[in-house]
Image 1 (cartoon, rainbow, N blue to C red):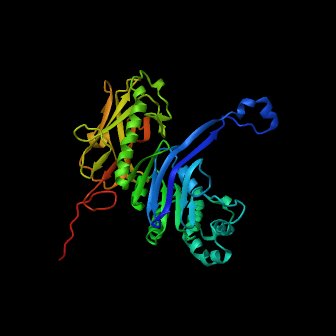
Image 2 (cartoon, rainbow, N blue to C red):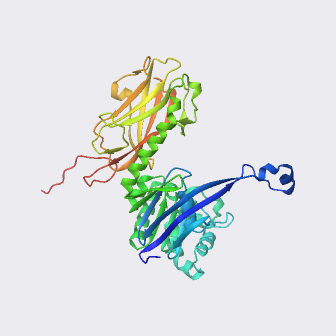
Image 3 (cartoon, rainbow, N blue to C red):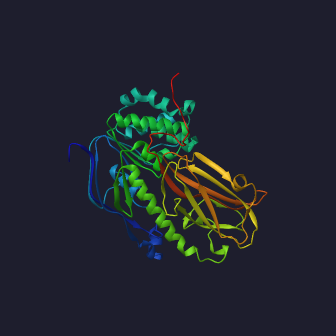
Length: 413
């Protein structure tokens, strides 16, 4: 193993046996022998990569691509079907929320149990106990059973233990998606401190903003293979473009539908979404382009973005109000407006088959953003409301930070 590397992965493969309905007793095995049949599912198909000491790496990819499996293999929670993994140094992980916690024991008791799993002695834990409790911000709840904890409290305790182990390698799987905004900021600050101390960090996350904030490099896993590795912004741009191409392929068969009965109310463009409304008017497809009509999902601050929705109007609704909201992928609300605000009245729908949103001269700064849309009548009765219909990335090259661009002047007097 190279001295400069913390992790080396070579030709890593992992295959699982998938049972449609596994038998649990001898009687069931005799009577329902077909239940013992299984299929082999190859989740990882031979990936190889190296991570240098002190690097922070993000793993991205669609659900089921193999990124969480990779993290569990690195942590030796499971073992590969074939291939080699070499990890240098002490490993700490946040892979399963509250893993190692006993529900009937207090938070304090679970600190000792969880920390001992990471290899700390009682003397080590005693020395770090005040820091762990202080960081968790649990207060008197530290003396109550963890079964009474919310998911956010679980995360606070688990994260507080893991970061105080002083490991050489820290593995994190989606854990930062839990908790309030202030605690997330505190976690990011602590992760940067750990990173600058020389530790190696590997993060699995669907939040591209989180990865760009913390990581030096990004690894994109697609269908069990390493698709791309490089700087986070470059990899994320290619990843989002691929996701949009997949989305459009999935929605092709919906374009020829003749009535709303064809559409699944739990999905949009072939993927699950949070959706509500009567269905009297429905969004059926979405397309995102630049000002020249060229399909794109990566834009620069001050660009123009056009988002076009196909609509189906089986009840021949004449007028409606269009609502639009932009959220960053950490669910921070960036912007919202309605067709009444922009057009001073209801929008005509009769005889129309598209709704076009044009965001002119966007003042958004770096981030991954999602678009919500609603169609409602003048009394705010919903026809169709969909969260996270499409996503796009924004970048700026002027060095400003935050969420939005503000005209600013700095001078002395």
